[in-house]
Every structure is written in C-alpha cells, then in structure tokens.
Image (cartoon, one colour):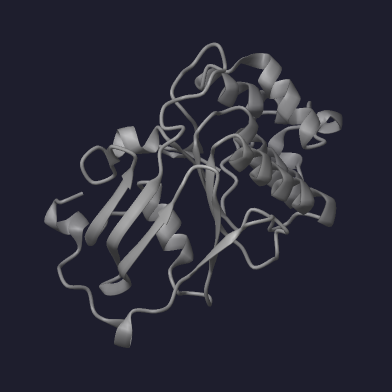
Length: 244
C-alpha cells in the first residue's frame, strides 16, 4: 500500500493522530481518460464517490482497473478529463490531492530489511501518528507474534497484512485498494472488509478493485468496459512530451 509520492499511503503529519484534510469531501471524476503504451485504456469515465460510500471496481482483466487506481493515486498522467477531491484538482495540484489518499496496490511496499514492527513504526513516524497507533495496527492484523521478524522472512500473506496495516496508522479519507484480499486467508479477507466498513462509517470513502464479494451493506459497483475499438492514444507519450 502507499501513501502517494512513492508507492506508500498516508496523510499529512498530524502529531496528535487526528484526521488530516479532505474528510467530508467527495471524489468527482469527469470524462477521465488514460493512455498506456500508445493505446487509450480509459476514455470518458465519469463517476462520483461521496463520503461514507464505497465502490467495488469491476471488469475483466486488462480493462483498466489498476490503471484507474494508479491514475487517481497520482502515479500515471491523465490524457483527458478531471479528477477532484473536494476543491483539490489532481491535475492542478497532484501533491495536495495525494495528501488525501491511501493507496494499496499489488506491491506491498514493505522494507524487507526492517522488522514487521519497525516497518509500521516507520510509517507511523512519517505520518505523525505515534507508536500507540502502530502497536494497535499490529494487534488488529494479528502480527504481534512476528513483530520482530524481518519482513523479508514473512510469507506473502503476512507481508500483505503488514502492508494493509498501514491503513490503520494513517488518516487519509480516500482509500484506493487494488485487490486487497490477494494472498489473504478467509479470516484476514473478512478483516479487510470490516476495516473498509469502519472507514466509510466514520466518513471516509473507498474505491476497491476486487474479484470477491466483500459483503459490505450498500456497496456500490463501478464496472469498467474497454474503450470502443481499443482506440489508439490521441497524443504522444506525455512523459516524452515533457507534460509529466
């Protein structure tokens, strides 16, 4: 998981562990498009995600679910459209937009040389939430028994739980989660669903790419479809053009 700006997760530094900016704001996406490898992957996508809501992101493999999440996390450039979280524009102020997001992708973004406890302690320190929050996250994800183990020696499921535990030591209102239950057993997958439910209950929002049923009451669905005729990109690579 990430606090955008690397693939890590997070909020602004708030030494008291209080909530960061953006709680109470909605995500509004209008006419969004994205190009990958010279092809238009997303085109004309519009949706709204209000505080207290969660959307399950659905669609066949390769349709652009991960691309959408990475674009909203600020890791990929937009080809068209707008993305706003409250008054903050992703295009106009990417850093401020990222301060409102916690991203959990396919990579767990743990530091293998650090222990499980030190990884969480590092994230809590970076985000100003303190040792108590890190300890509580360890307990919530059942990681106390391996707290002193280097992350490099953890199983895939343990690393996944460690990466997701970062959600509990930061206070970002918008969660972008890409298949968060991969490598998890049934009990841990259920815990992830419970945490998403608790997050939206306190006024957060979540956009979750998942192939399983999370069992969350009121969970909406955003289904992606390929652009018509797999349209070619409308412009050259923005990285090469210097627009990114």
